[in-house]
Image 1 (cartoon, rainbow, N blue to C red):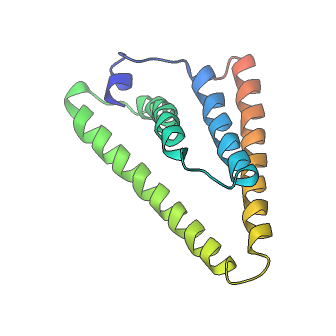
Image 2: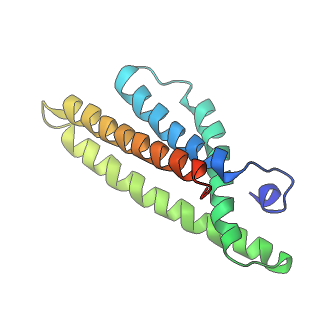
Length: 135
């Protein structure tokens, strides 16, 4: 994120934002279609880089001087990671609770399909925004 914030790595938001939506769609598709996700860590690393570029876009909207860069990046990352941990914790509790019931596989797939559909909506919004010059 620091390299992207300083401009060493750069992708326009019109590319990054749709890519983020595509990563959400891919993981949802993988959850529904594949029983074995052993190599997900490779995708997670790549997707994390893409999402990091998106977060830098948000961070750049906040006026930060170079002297405040380290504190800003650390606090921004900690906030993002805590929010993600909260979301994952809620999802894990819901999925473990559902596992007690015979309909758990349907719930798991349905949840993934719902997230994938939201990813498609987000992708459409990002593509339209990019074409309108808003992204």
